[in-house]
Image (cartoon, rainbow, N blue to C red; front, side, top):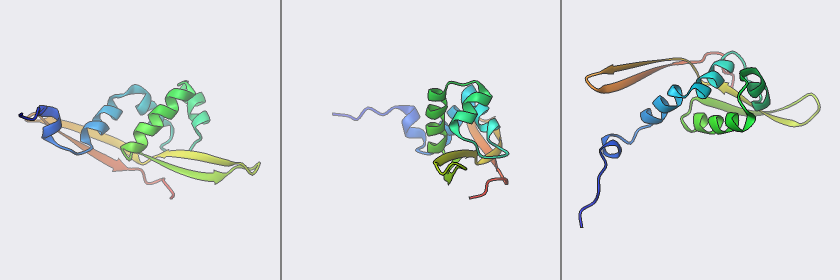
Length: 113
């Protein structure tokens, strides 16, 4: 019995396709733009971008999977632990030449780990 091979899966097993997909998503782009300069809580991202909180958490999960976002926990003034998110990229440039897309990401220098 022959194995069924799909062309898209055979091409490459890199993360490029996922990154393209995330950057093509309008909500993902709004979230990344909102957290370039300073880290923010998911609730603050939701209010600022007017994206429902559940969608923000879904996009955060996808962005972290692609290593486009940094997550850190910190203590709030009231002593509670809060999770902050910040974009790891400042901008992205996508080129398509000879049917082969390439992506160039610029590191966000304001991220303090």
